[in-house]
Length: 228
Image (tube, rainbow, N blue to C red; front, side, top):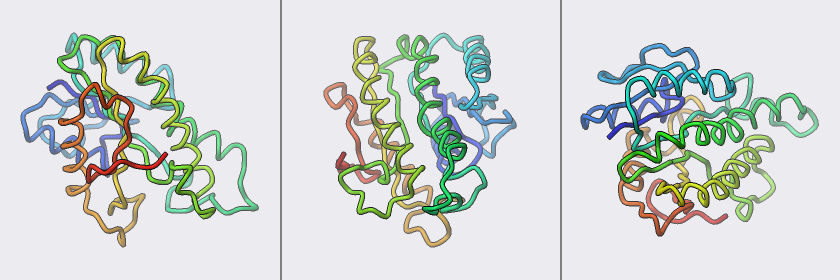
């Protein structure tokens, strides 16, 4: 397969790159700086999802190498602008600038990436767009203690992709939303219950098995549907 992964320099994105590269797939590993990632066989691509010019440049660069994509994984995301878990998420200190920055990366950016690469996906073999969301994006499961900006940005991502899925289906593209679980990454922290390998293996399996009849569905990494 021909695959583009955003945010492939660390965490879940890096694990996606490793697992697909080991299978022999052609993997374009997108990151803000475009540096080579720790996944042998991947092709580094500078792709900052918060920058429309960067998205356009990445599309041009990849388009010179291939004429179609079979899979796009919208993985890039941030918890806060300062790094670390729960930073900038305390009620009473919320700011518009922080919210806008998080939405730009977690919600708007993935939608713009999907839009820009639709032409390449539409020419792929059984093409799919997979979006790494979060259980925090579930409105019905919010018990009032979800992180304000982050959870809202993931709910917005889900809505963008539910809308995009209708347009994508006309071009033969299947869209899936994925919740990775609580994973031991920089974002998830060392006390998380899942390794990146476990989480990504489950999501890869879902991506492989998803059919057009399940277009725009939302699944947990273990294959269970997630409540909207």
